[in-house]
Structure formats: structure tokens, C-alpha cells
Length: 586
Ligand SMILES: Cc1cc2nc3c(=O)[nH]c(=O)nc-3n(C[C@H](O)[C@H](O)[C@H](O)COP(=O)(O)OP(=O)(O)OC[C@H]3O[C@@H](n4cnc5c(N)ncnc54)[C@H](O)[C@@H]3O)c2cc1C
Ligand code: FES
Image (cartoon, rainbow, N blue to C red):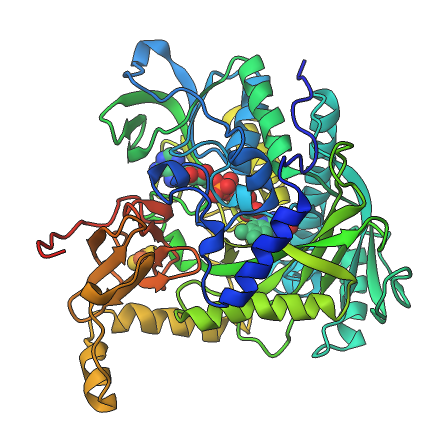
């Protein structure tokens, strides 16, 4: 049914172009502008959620974005849509696929092009090796909880494989082993605890091996997770989109949903209305949360990734993770995640693959100086060079993950809508969003078609999460941000330090600033036009901060992000753009 349209990493730009681009970038140290090959404007925003680019961006979004019609009319009651889905990432498209296959009339609304959110920035390890560790999850959810978690993630891997086969999706899906090795701050006891916990959870084929053979560094003892998987995520989702259309579903892109008026009405920002029996909010961070306060149950983190050239077959294909820095205060100890994306094109230099390495996570909005962010990439590079025989770095990008406080995603009925039971959310994807997104598709479909599903209560969004012990410091930091929000710290800071107070008039091209006292966010765009916005986050009013690496304004309270070029939201929970301010003297 689905023709083979894309091949792996099918860029028509050769490697030498990439390496010279990177070499230039290294010399520029804190300047990220090499990534801005296109104008950073609202067209760019429809493709991705920042200015850095993943390999999938290069391969798909830039060349042939998944663009459909924009909604330009009302969809009335009489047309009877069974399910409206807001958001075209892995959650939205997996749910739309399963529902339309089951015979439901489904419509997907996406405000950019498909996969312009975090799915376009993923590294796409497909695994039941959960980054929160089974031995931690067991303390919070009990043995039955971890058994259900393991069962659901294993089923998600199998489901993805089955869909790839049934729909003939050419997305480089392959089974491979996963290896969890120790961060220097960790001890063998962690692997032993995890081994036992995975066995109790029903994953009985894990084992501790002395090291991963074939690597150029000694991993030391590892926990082996056999039969995990990886794919090229956007080719998979492109296949899902084709299948949704085939089964009678509809997809509208460039269609921003402004309001959900319970129980049945959806309004677009262009003023069109859709009536629908069921509504699925698949916007990563839910855009309705007044009652659920789901933003209090999870935390937004930035995570960083590099993609480097590596000679083909230099290291064995596998998913590799370390156990993360145990001294960190993050909800999940920031760990390194590593995989290989193969070049399969015959017509370009295929002596190399891309080694993709991620890590260096921090709370969104907690690092605001450019040097601090550049350090994340430098750290990743040196960590990688110390272990893997990589050559030039071809890609560097960052993205956002939402860490649920108790390590399990929130998938099910939207809290506050229990009576009608027709609005659904899926969020708290953690670093396991590809399987969580697929689990969301399975659970939400079962709830909507009234089929019993054993995982419903584990993922119930109405639960009050019990926090892991190392969460408390993170939660305190965020609470402090919320409380300090209205305090005028900035003026005293400049007075005490006798520093010159920065001003937006002096901004260089492509630079932004937040003046805390005046609550103004300013950005001078590539055409030298000064853009001024209110620095008040449109979610709950915290003050946003400047993120130079992605040219965005980010909210340290719950992770909303806004484009510097347009003020539009690029990550929720905020769903309204920044208010524009006028300045007549630029
Ligand atoms: C760098 C990085 C590496 C990762 N690595 C892995 C990994 O190896 N394995 C793994 O399992 N997970 C990984 N994850 C997590 C995983 O990729 C994500 O959890 C997952 O892709 C999120 O999917 P989603 O559908 O929830 O959100 P998204 O993909 O963000 O989709 C939400 C969509 O909703 C749209 N939207 C938002 N608001 C509106 C609105 N009002 N109207 C219309 N549309 C709207 C957005 O434009 C967006 O396209 C990683 C994430 C990152 C950032
Ligand atoms: S994200 Fe909640 S106040 Fe900004």
C-alpha cells in the first residue's frame, strides 16, 4: 500500500559540506548561527521546535515536510467526527492510526507540519529498559505496577514492529540489544538491583555481562536487554500518516487549536469550530490543565544530542546507556544514550554511519547563559570522543522531555472531565516517549472503543504521584521559581554588582534578552528588526528566560517555550503566544 519514499539519511548534501560547517562552528564557539540555513520565521517553526536540527529534520522536514491541508471551514455536528486529536507527534498519530483502523472517524489537527514537535527531535531508542529504573519504580508502584509497565513497553515495541510489517513502512526498523553500563558515580549494586527488579517485572531475559565486546572502551559490567529496537522515527510516522488516510482518517496541518470547550467543541485560532464525540489532547504537554494541574505532576527538562561520523561497522550495532550521574538532583539522573543510524544510500559516501549521543539534561530555563549551554555540547563531545572512534560532528540539537514525578506517564481521561469521559490526555513521556506514545495509542483507543485494558489504572492521569526521593530538590527549585516570580530581583542585582543594566536597544542580530524588571522580552531578528514581547508566560505568569541556543524564550516554571521570531508557543503547556509590545525607536 505504501510506496517506499525515503531512504535512510538521504541528504543530498555531502559529508565534506557538513564537516566544514561544523569546523566553522567550533571556531565560533558560542555562536549557533550555522544552523540557521533557512530564515528563522513562522515557516521554520512549522517544521521544528527550535533552530537546531536533528538528522531527521535534515532528511524529512527540510526536504519534504509532512504538510496537509489547513482547516478552512467548520466541521458540524452532523458530520459526526468520532475522535478529534490535537497534536501530530507519535502520540497523536499512533492514536489516530489505531482508532481509524478500528473503524472510527478520526481527524488530526497539528499546528505546524506533522512531527514538528519533540518527535522530530527524538533519538528513537525503542526499549523497555526504563530510564527511571525498575527498582525505583517498584518502590512507587509496587511489583504489579512494574510488571504492567514492563508488559506495556514490551507490547509497544511489538506493536511498532507489527505496524511496520503490516503497513510496509520503510523506516529502518531493526531489533538489536541494549546495554546499560555504569556511570563512574555508580556501583555494580545498581545493575544487580535492576537485574532482579526486571526479572520480578517479567523481563526474564536480562543478564549481567562482564562488558560489551567490540567497543573501543571497556564498559565494565553491563545489564543486557536483548531484543530492543530502533528506527528512523519520521519515516515511521510518515508511514502512520499514510495509513491513517488509507483507513479514512483526516489530517489538517497548520491548524492551531486555541480552545477546547468541553465536552465536544474545538476552536481553531482562525475561528473555525469542530464538534467531536471524543477529544484527545496529544500536544506533549496538555494545553488544558486548569483542573488537572498536570504541570505540577511532571517537570520539563532540556536534553542535548550530537550526531558524529563513525566508520561503518566500527562498533557493534546496539543501544547503549550509562546509569547517569548519581550525584545529580534531576528527577532522572542525567545519563548518556547512544545509538547508530546507518547510512543506507548507495549514491552517497556510505563508508560512514552516524553515532547519535545524547545527555547533559537540565531543568528547562535553569541554564540561561550561552556558555553554559555550549558546555553541554562540549561535554557530550568529549564524553563521546573518550569512548567511541568518531570523526566530525555533523549534528547538534536539543529537545524537551517531560519527567513524571513518579516515573510513569499520564495517559487516560483528562482529570476534571470524569463525568463525560470524552476528553483524553497523554503526557509525561520521559526519555521513553516512543514506547509511551505507542502505549498511549493502545490505551486511548481501548478507552474510546470501550475495550478493557489492563494498563489503565497504572497510567491514570488523576493519580497523585508519589515522588522519588531525589525529586524533592527539583520540585523545590521550581516552587521557588513560581514564588519568586513577582519579586524584582534584577534591579538589586545590578545595583549591588555595579553592573551596567543591559538594554534591548544594543542587541546584536539574532540575539535576545529578558529585562526582568520591565518584564520585557526582546529579540533582534536576522533582518535587524527588533521584536518586543511581554516576558510574562501566558501559562500561569512566570517570567520567561532567553535560550540563545534555540532562539526561544523558555519558562522555568513548567517548560513552556515561545519562538523569539514570532512569540508563538513552541512547547506547552502555554497555548497562547506572547503579548507583543510596541517600541517606536528601532
Ligand atoms: C532529544 C530527545 C531524545 C529523545 N530520545 C528518545 C528515545 O531515544 N526513546 C524514546 O522512547 N523517547 C525519546 N525521547 C522522547 C520522545 O521523543 C518524545 O517523548 C515523544 O516524541 C513525544 O511525542 P508527543 O507526540 O507526545 O509530542 P510531540 O512530538 O511534541 O507532538 C505534539 C504536537 O502537538 C502540536 N501542538 C501543540 N499544541 C498544539 C495546538 N494548540 N494545536 C495544534 N497542534 C498543537 C505540536 O506542534 C507537536 O507537533 C526523546 C526526546 C528528545 C527531545
Ligand atoms: S509554563 Fe507555567 S507559568 Fe510558564
